[in-house]
Image (cartoon, rainbow, N blue to C red; front, top):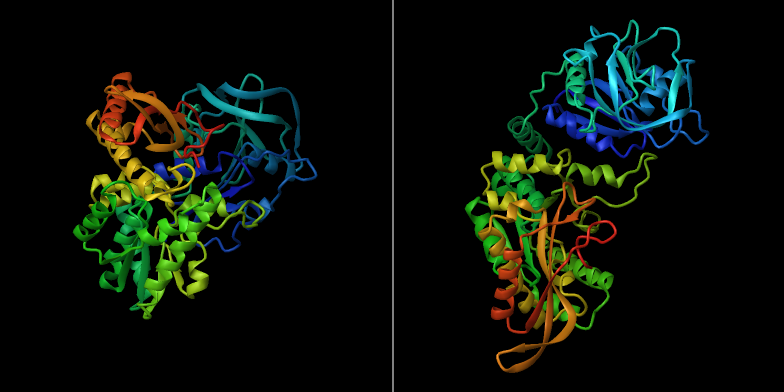
Length: 506
């Protein structure tokens, strides 16, 4: 593992963004809960203390013994992190009469300070705090101010320890990335972490971890599991066996395309056609959560039965990525959701886990996939729910409804590509509504289903906005679906954002 910077998370909504900014600087970092800062700092070259929703003087405030690491390596406190060091050292942090939320002008007081090297004497930074530092402890020196915050940035004399009350990780801070780059330099990290170096170190790590034992892995065609499988195969070759469970709820022709892609990549992949089982078990089930449970249960049963045919397997490969791990543990260390991609399988099957992507963000996974020479259409495939079309057919799922939706969805997706819109949206898909309406086709009255089209723009799927697709495009999609898909006589477009709506309808 390369040298790294530790980010201590005190509950800020932008902690992951700090990590993203460092990764963009080709610097490896890890996010840990505020109360899990490692005592063994081997390989750690610096520490960043995040913001927090609390006040440092509040009874419920999160706290950590920063004195234990001060002077041992460079430290950068951001907002709450800066205030915490002041508070613990005898300075004063108080509720501000002039709260700062939004853009403010930073004025450098000590332009020769190495943290501020190369920054403009005046530039915009982003503030988001109701408390402010009103008195610095002895040995703390102000290095930058704003019109309303005297101690916007400081340094502890005789140490490589800094605090800033603004948020350099927010893109509204015009030169925030430069400040973080300066901190990386002060940590002595050269910024050489890249997709290629990750692949090289991961191959060695996987080989050491797995040895000569066998690995099995469930594949769905999704980018995370696919990249993980290719990386595992690069490391251990035929010791990896992949299993693709076809639940009959994929998009039209997608199962065949996925298997062809895996074959071209040299992956040994066993296809299990369990579509009849899934569709039979979904008969009569209308509740969305109940459908998810049926599909999840059936998947585990089918995968487990197939895996029993490979008794020599000792490892389960998974495409877990870093946000899964971060979101699985809150800053008190309590598990709030499982991050395993295949819930329950490791425990039930007594397999050890190998998760080669567990320290990567989504965009980094894609870059690794490209570096592994994987096809672009696999890397930039739109997110697709695990239950597949089972939750895009609203209400009861039947073979007839799945066939209707597959045809409509293919028309929609093909036209997105034709209009060069596919890569412009985060996710798109068709939904078959449990609604029939009257129409006229030719000289005949029809009473058929309605298809809703969904397309959103997003960065991380935590929030999303409906995509402003051209009217001419929507008109062609509607005409093609109504004219070519028997059973549909009406097409609608979803103009809801997340929140309050979700990306998927079920």
